[in-house]
Length: 251
Image (cartoon, rainbow, N blue to C red; front, side, top):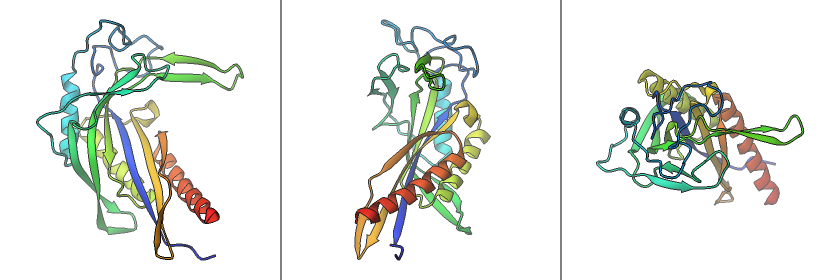
């Protein structure tokens, strides 16, 4: 069977933990590795009557990052509530941004992995601030299905950098992530320690397949919370193969 012409469409959402000593809306420490639930207060626990206070350093770091990735910094930004229920989200919603982010309409130029002499320009839709959720730990190995919650990360400042769906290969995605990480570390925006959760990646991928002159798009699949570039590349390559095979079998 001949291979049908395909175009891979990849967009990335990169969560970068900002290099602040305290959380986004309270004075609790962001230090990694402390005992569970020892870096919490009424604000990040979402207790009634607790009032947030903005971390100005997080704003400064977000703007520094936005300028480095060629974003515009609008004169007005606002916060939004992202409503969802999960045990590690005490308030029942996440304070985030959507339509009026702190940074918008940027780009990042990378060397084309297929042609090192060429440059690929990856669009960036926005880079917005948000607070992190806590961490759920599931005891699946012991067979008791116990779950424990560590809320130390609740309220940790994140900058979510959302790309346009401009990448066409897993290698391009890896090159984009490498350049983005190097930029954030160099500017002191984040330490980007992936093993500590300071940089996490969600990848969105689908295929546009040209079948006898008709463009057929597969459903977009999101692969979430990847903590290494190797895992991102492996997941994207697997998903591209899976989507292609599933489509031609159905067709």
